[in-house]
Length: 306
Length: 146
Ligand SMILES: Nc1ncnc2c1ncn2[C@@H]1O[C@H](COP(=O)(O)OP(=O)(O)O)[C@@H](O)[C@H]1O
Ligand SMILES: [Mg+2]
Image (spheres, helix red, strand yellow):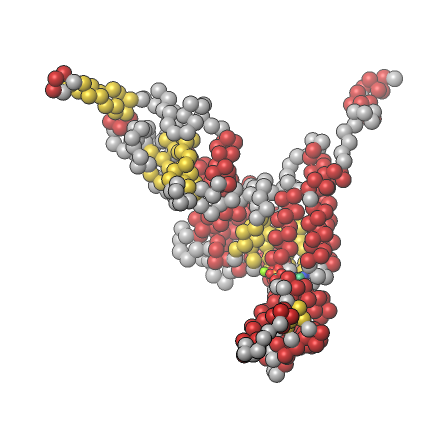
């Protein structure tokens, strides 16, 4: 029996009544992340690997919170992230949802994202950069700072570039204010890799890397449907076939930007639709006409003549 | 002598956590929060020096706390206060104002009496600190802005 007397801790820990137990499901429900993850599945087409990664991160953070609630290792986990992928693959959209998740899980105080690029952080002359960067940090505090095309902060070809000053201030805050700010860097994957190779300090502070794949043609068509519905329009059946053709052609052209190209195409289609209705304004226009994007609104695109 | 001014003058000095919560309240109301400092503690001195610009586009008090900390580090021996300005129509005025820093030594005020015609007595207060030039009143240099 002497063994038990030597280990009073173990003895009490084995007794179920004393062992702290945690209702992970209750934590999950009160955080509201279930609804957010479902919303992400519903509103964002495709992005399988991204959604899986976000779920993994959410699970990790939920368990981390449960651990914290019973007093295990209270040091805040590093939450800074890097989203890589081509333009229009949904990085900004997912960052906004990430802020919602982090807020629901209690890792950030406000559900807000401040999006910036190099020009918002880096100044033009000596002494200009630090106040600019600090101003942005002040605005972002409590939420998420999203830095698009973060690699432009580092311009090795100019040794007196002020970008490094911004990077140093960022690194300091990313380390010292883990409770106050989550930084998400975004940009092309290859350039981001080069950036991290020359800025190991930054690389070591990024805990989660998420890669955004390009969309398939069918996914882009689905995105087009979702966007038209979101704008309270609909694609006529022939217009949808035209859109499918449009997508295949556009994908093969330069400066194709995934979902962003689709949004731009739809904006132009709306313009043509409005023009078409305006030209026909002598006769009565049905409510359905106001809603419908016709085949010609899409086929008139330059993409079909080039 | 311990100077008291503005909101919460009846309370002990606020802790950083209490300041954070007051600032967050102001931001939640949509008020612009400003930090000001002075070494002239006269209650009628309304011209304190601004520490940077008022902050009106912040969501979280931490951003203001960064400026508060910077101001207190730069002027540990001066009075620092936080103001919240409400720009909405009908108010357009300061809604909150409270001290968040004070010099270690506060010499206080002298009460001056001056006798006028008919032996009428006029009173005025003068802070002992302002007997010395600005910037040398509580020791330390004056720096303006962040
Ligand atoms: N998977 C998706 N489903 C629906 N819409 C999307 C999807 N991905 C991107 N979009 C839309 O495409 C546009 C560009 O996306 P964005 O998040 O800004 O991409 P990025 O930041 O990677 O350039 C936005 O209007 C966004 O709503
Ligand atoms: Mg973007």
